[in-house]
Amino acid sequence: MAPTPRPLPAVRPVARPDVADVAAALARAFEDDPVMMFLLPDEVSRLRRLTAMFSILTKHVHLKHEGSEVGLRDGTIAAGALWDPPGHWRVPLTSQLRQAIPLVRAFGTRLPTILRALGTIEQDHPKEHHWYLATLGTDPSAQGLGLGGALLRSRLDRCDEEGVPAYLESSKESNIPYYERFGFKVTGELQLPGAGAPPVWPMWRDPDRKL
Image 1 (cartoon, rainbow, N blue to C red):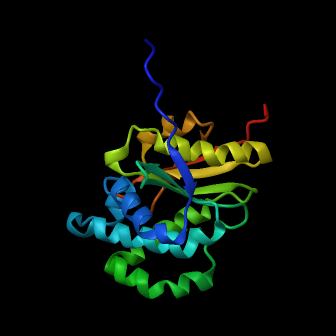
Image 2: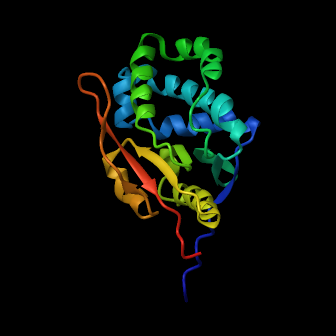
């Protein structure tokens, strides 16, 4: 008797009431990320600071673009993909100023280091028309269930239909083969500023023209 196939993970757009749950899931996903460990070296406060950061980013940067989605496990948010549509990947200065106080509260004395790293990444960002995957993460307790793949496929299928490229930066070298399975290719290696800072790997994906 053939085994019963596992149902496809549920994916839906992010809504405002989801912000806290998305932020918590992404914070847990990135707690052991090399870049985040460098930017937020204090293990005791890292999860709290990451939760605050992803809450700010989801609510005030990505939500308004209506391109971000969540992956559900048993109806509960366990993964998130924060996407920005073509022409909207750069955070406007007015938005940065509005979030200055919450960012200072979240990061304290680490904020200048974080801003330098983000500035370096932004300088290398491609100018071509594309969808930008700013963040993809799955709660460690839900990894291996296909949530990340379902989130990627959801947006990339639409990129293929519309003939639009996609772009991301991988902050873990071990994740590069995973993204390559979805058609992304490494375009370089970007060294973040600061002693002991890890690199990130920009990755570009042309749309699948076979559709």
